Image (cartoon, rainbow, N blue to C red; front, side, top):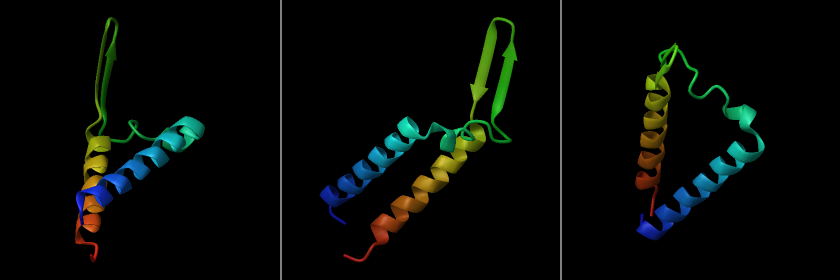
Amino acid sequence: MDTGRLLLVLGLLLVVWGLIWLYAPWLLSWFGRLPGDIRIEREGFRFYFPLTSMLLVSLGLSLLLNLLLRWPR
């Protein structure tokens, strides 16, 4: 796949993601609150490490890029 087409598809996906985030944020309210996301809150201290959420993002991006790069030319 040529670079232009890949950038176009990724740009469109970012636009769709942004529109969902802007106009329907309740669809993404689960993100960052999954089991396995580490959250420690104490007085004067807050630590947040979204381990499970980032694993899902990595898996999704890997699948998407593999599908796009293997798409018949």
